[in-house]
Image 1 (cartoon, one colour):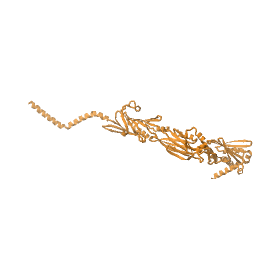
Image 2 (cartoon, helix red, strand yellow; image 1 turned 135 degrees about the horizontal axis):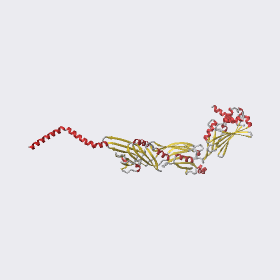
Image 3 (cartoon, one colour; image 1 turned 180 degrees about the vertical axis):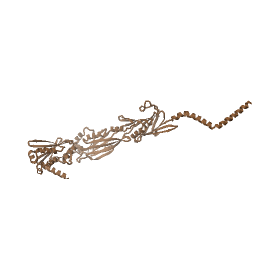
Image 4 (cartoon, one colour; image 1 turned 90 degrees about the vertical axis):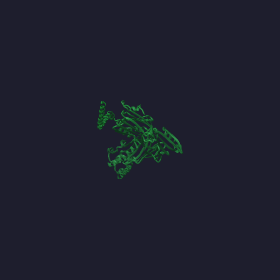
Length: 566
């Protein structure tokens, strides 16, 4: 607080200081973008210098060199016994000017600037809460602290003259703080901005200006000229007309760039970020941000009523001059059909090619995100072809476990399950369950599924469920070109099954059985040997019975022989 009081006293003293001896004149050269130069010129005679300054001319030069702020440059001149020091402040924008003047003032300057050259807002507002003498307070402070002036010099040292402002060929003049307000306004009822995504992925925007009849009577020609070169249309309404500007763009950034042109704004902009949802590559979320600058359409209260909508969302309905709008939108790309080819060799060698066909409703960024979603150690040869009707294709090569890991991360709900069981007599049975799940859409997506087995020692069965979603199926020996591309030159197809499916929520089950080769060959010698062993065991078990029978037979034979000899 004490510093502020001291500074106020110094500034007040400075006003009196410049009452006679040293003349201070200011000049501001300003452009529309608020770039320009501000100069403060101090002029005094040699007699005034000797009368008020307790030092030499060299002392003053050294003081200015040591004390001049870095944001200022200066030059000195003398002629006919008159001396002058001109200090210049160059700036590139309103922000730059504000920062540099704050460094000179040591308090936050308040600067109001607005320029309008539209049919609705025309003229200049330029106001400041400081004067040229305030910007030179640093010099008075340095003189006072070095004791080159004293309290007695305050009343007759300085003489504040004027500050002139040059803007677009017109000159304004003030002796104290700058305060220019010659803005004129023409009534504008409201502005409505609507954006609608189209089926081809482009964005269509309409900007409607609701113009009262009074404004049309005054500025009709200027309004038509202001929007010349843009696609516009007029519609009558009660007590006025609606001027509609319509345009489209492939991205939101390009859309907001066209909006900036129509609004004749330098600061309007728009950005967006697209992400595809994990496990749902055909579903996108887009985060939008748009900054609206309606300076050229505001009313005398500094705002204009604006309604801003996106699809069926009303995101803004208020009076604004500038506004930063952030929102999100979801989009789902619908699939038309699919074609899946699976080549089975064994659990460590599964090959696939998948083609997904759709009529594109995505923009270029969304399509790039879609393609990038298909990644993994087993996924390769990802392509996206076609103009409006597009086909996204990719291949998979790897083990069942690896392929399942990659594919389930791309498509939520998709899974590959492998079961193996072995029996001593029945051999090995391999069951592969392929749970297809492409989307979460309510409408089923038709497609084709082809299963190819190249295992020569397996008996194969293939089935698809649920049965009601299977349109047709057939087995064949002819391999399509796409399936042949997955085979090696020395491999032979042992089984090929093709299904025409009505849905993308299906399960295809493959079962391959391999007989026990050991027991198949072993049976060729085990069975005869078993019969021999059985016969020998039988003989050993019935040995006594057999001997008794043989002895009994021997006795009968001997009796028969004796009988016939006699």
